[in-house]
Image 1 (cartoon, helix red, strand yellow):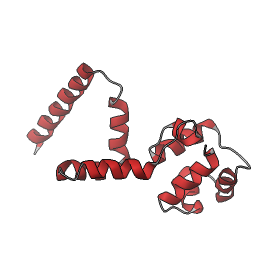
Image 2 (spheres, helix red, strand yellow):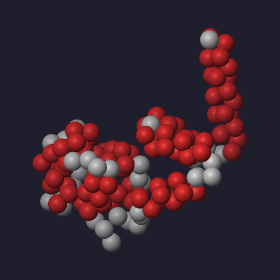
Image 3 (cartoon, rainbow, N blue to C red):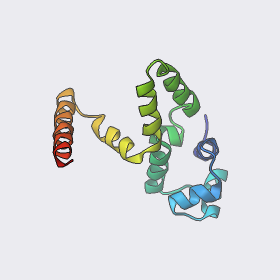
Image 4 (cartoon, rainbow, N blue to C red):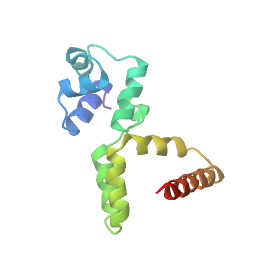
Length: 133
């Protein structure tokens, strides 16, 4: 099974980031990130959560208790959406926008009734914005 340090390096290189770039994103020194990737040190829990959120993976995936292949997952989703260009465009936007990712993470555990309530709130906001135009 992969270790945290190997998974971190894989996620970073898969996204095309240098150690310096990821260190800046996480607010740490490059040397600190390098020590995580070599396994000499480990980040604190809050930083692990930040890393998982940045790469859109679960804590279990990041620390190695669950196997995954991010490339396969994304490729599989995109292949499944090729027949629906609107959904494919939405998925591409979702991958890039942290605000949409946060919205879906917050809504995901809700019951169907809870989601219907959120939809009603969104429609009310849309109606209000349409009246302002």
